Image (cartoon, rainbow, N blue to C red; front, side, top):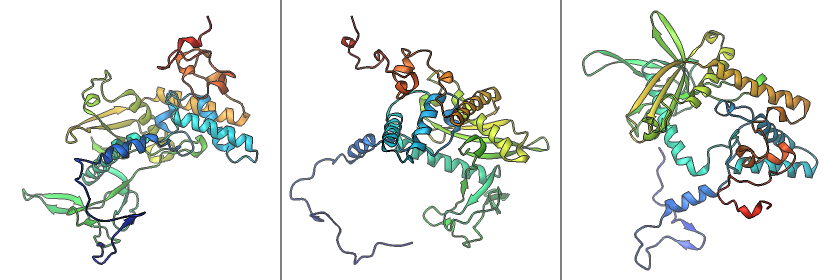
Length: 358
């Protein structure tokens, strides 16, 4: 561990030097408010190219086609083509709309997602140490990775005098994963890639579980979801597991069947819901994948791939019935889709009825 050298020079920032204040300190400097304002002002960063299972079910093929084609057009030698592409990408990333969300997490929600990441890592480690999570494990100290399999474990004697399997020391760094800060041996799970290049599909599932049951190791796609108390208690109306989560996980089942020959008969998903407001509370569900939902997702992917091959917008597959529908009037690419702007956005909060012709 490296320590801050005591003889280090005093830090400065521009013309400011370290020293006591000349006046009384305020009760707080509201640094968190400044951070939130900065994060809210930032634009979304685009996700990696390709289809993502979390977006596929409700994806509008037209929106996806226009966004993806615009990314390709950034390499055009024509400045006008590049300018048009940048305009479309910015509209898609910065506008709140339904049907496709190719942007990464909104900056204002980063803190929430970092909490979710920590819950994911702890759940994966716990399931791995218990001997259920299969895959590749990475040493957080030396970054060495294992061959695919269960977490490296060793036997100890528990408080009751019984044998117990726990995380083992990393052989590559001779136990460097025994982190002194927490007095605990750690391994990091490498989430399996569930991509299919031939389908332009990209994504990682939370894990592959192998659970002993009636003389077999039954495989499951593991999905860990961290939600607040209202969602955890079903106060939004939908019981757990949520339909959107089932849709996403079912796509992973479909991809895993094609990626791993020994998972050709995979048919189940194991959900773990953790209450972010009380992280010791969790619910578990073992369910069958919904392959009817997968058929719709595959149809959406096929539509876009065929449209790209023809180099034409797949307007026949757009979600909007007409240009005056609510989805169309809030869509960032409505003009490219219908060839004209909607007459007026009646659904906008700041809509001025003076815009309508008498």
